[in-house]
Length: 144
Image (cartoon, rainbow, N blue to C red; front, side):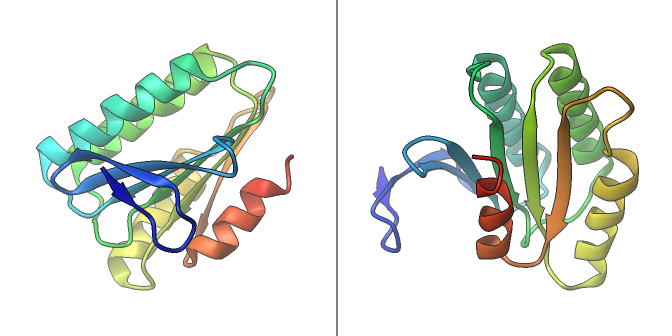
C-alpha cells in the first residue's frame, strides 16, 4: 500500500493502472485511472460498483474519477453507463466528479459525461467534469 505524500492517506492499488483512496475522513472516494485497457477499465468499474452498493444512505455520495491519462473506449462507455444505472437503482444522492485532460480525448470524455451520463428527472445525483483535481474536490465538498 502506498501513502499519498500530499495528504497522508493510504492509496489502494486496484490494478496496475488504477488506484483508489479515501479522502476527507472517508467521505470522498478518489479513483485514478491511468489506462483505457479493458482489464484496467474492468477493475475500476468493478471497484466503483462495490463502492456504490455499499455507500451509506445517510451520507452524500462523493466520488472523484481522475481519467486524465485515459481515453473513452467503447468498453469504458458501456461500463460507465452500467454504473449510472446502478446509481439510479440504488437511489444514490450526491455527486461524482470526473477529471479529464485538456486534450481532444479529455473533451470527448467530458461530452460523454455531460450529455450521456447526465441525470434524468427525479434523480438526486449529478456528475460534472473538471480539468483540475483540486477544483473537482472542492465541488464535491460543497455538498457536506
